[in-house]
Image (cartoon, rainbow, N blue to C red):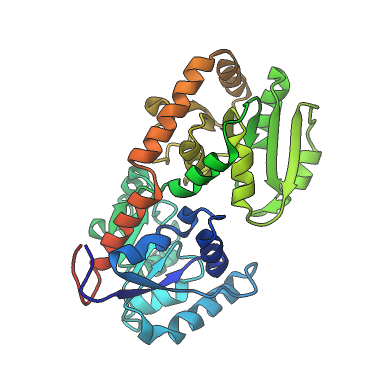
Length: 363
């Protein structure tokens, strides 16, 4: 399974890799947020972690910093592995022009689309020639990408991105079995708070919401202050990445709710895979970009976007069907163990990276 000598990859992430690796080693941070990088050593792949810059709010500063750091270590690695192309654009263009000679393997979070403006499309076609391999989160995202002339099927694959089960197993053992009474919402990206709060106001069911003050251009302070919050809905604002603390809260919940705005990617996925790992059922906006059908797998209930009545019905079903809800949780954990977990994700990532190894062509 291992090549004759270690392969080295420059690992790029938009988050603070050093902090996450340190806390993962301490057992207080889930490894799946590093997209398999924590497990690559098992396959004979050593990582050189990218050192994040100090201006994450500036895309151009981030891009320039990333370019300089990637070139600085150029002779130390065989390829680049990235969780996103955001910040890596200059390196990808250099690769497409033959000026950067190392393969680039990365995760593509949305479907590849065709630009409406001809000039933008021509530039984008040059850009995509600089990506050697792309991972997609679902078959739908890959299939939709193939509608674009920029997409090259031989450079695209789906990988089962899923949770770090070891992390959640330890957490469950330490916390013990809780008495679950409340619903919980922990996501912060493109969340539809008005719909969610309205549904819970109607059902009178207890709900705990954990949000950032601002995220991705959305001001949740303003959004939440503009809607009526009933007493049984508790809103908590958090700062920074605190996955263990939030996972402890999720473990106490009877159901995870993921109410999102309509987008063209897998918004809500991080919250979803955590619920699977903890064996907790979900009520979720019906996102067709997920890798699996929540209803068909029996792990929860989906609701159309912005459908308050649909959310109300789903909440009442969970409230009145405890046995069925328990089965949903069992199926959720089973799905995580079978497919959507860090071990399987890391194996797929390693296999793809090693295809570009100068020392070994397969595992």
